[in-house]
Image (cartoon, rainbow, N blue to C red; front, side):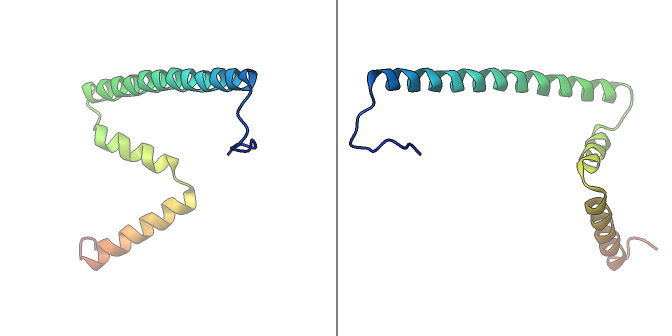
Length: 92
């Protein structure tokens, strides 16, 4: 929070600075949100292109998810899934 006690009003200069700083933060966030939307649209286009050439988009998304995981996390997850599949009699 602020280091300024509540009973002391901000000077005009401080208030002006805070207002400009706030405006700057808002404008930066808005620009980043626009960039994020543009990137999301680009990713959507790449998935559509992959689908158009015959790739399974669901599988691609799963691979991306796996690649984000730490190797140890991935191995632990795969071991648990295998154990559950065996318990359900779904693997030999």
